[in-house]
Length: 326
Image 1 (cartoon, one colour):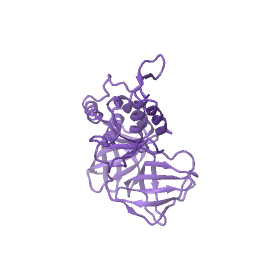
Image 2 (cartoon, rainbow, N blue to C red):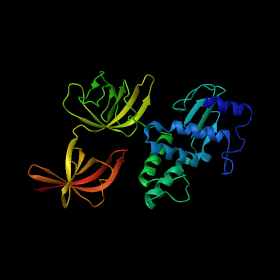
Image 3 (cartoon, rainbow, N blue to C red):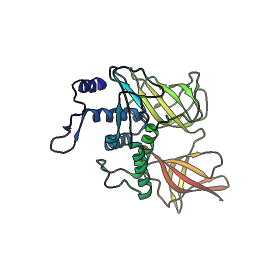
Image 4 (cartoon, rainbow, N blue to C red):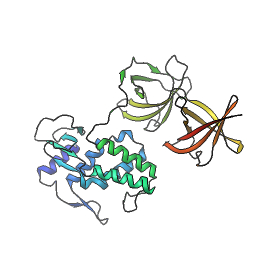
């Protein structure tokens, strides 16, 4: 439908016709510009973003849309293509497509450099510049994450997996409490795995959800984060999960100097590194407020650095770890 509507506009020589988008609000657009906004949005992997990131990504795409480029044949900088005669999503131009009449190749043009420059301004200034109208106020770390994501998917070099995936043997992730679900693992890599949820239960399954997973027949738990969700028919979904830890430790952390107050969290450690991550309830992480965890004859002190990841009901923060005698 999307392709056919734009094909109709081109056939009637209306693709460049300017129209007022919202009466009384000012601003105009063209069918070609709206086609490029939707096509670039689809090509930017929005299924790998949190809801607030999707909203900001759409606004950034609208901001940069006048820089986007469209042509009838492949050319340098035109990273994506589509065939207006087909109901198809945009595809990355890894090889030259068939030169059919409906072929349209497109890319972000100068917007690739501009989104990089804007990200640098946010990092230096600590906020989105006021002259950049995004229709709302967004936390700097959210804006930076979205700009990083867009730059990654807009670049001529296609995003690659951090590890080669291998075919799995159909193991099921099975839990023993009443809120558990049984999923089928399709592929596994060093950084995560893909699985099929045969029967969705409720609407909790979304990008950014934190999961505790246990292989069928195993005793160890894995902490994972949903990065992609592709909902299928019959209440099924394919899910891409990043592995955060294969040995997460559920603990109660004392607030340094306030011994009577403890907060539950999940400790995420990578070997003997001096830095650790801790998954906490939103609002627990406070700059300058150390966390402490007694372990045997030692006390582990966690010095707060920054929040690395946020979800609807958690924050994952980075800490420097110091160990002292109890």
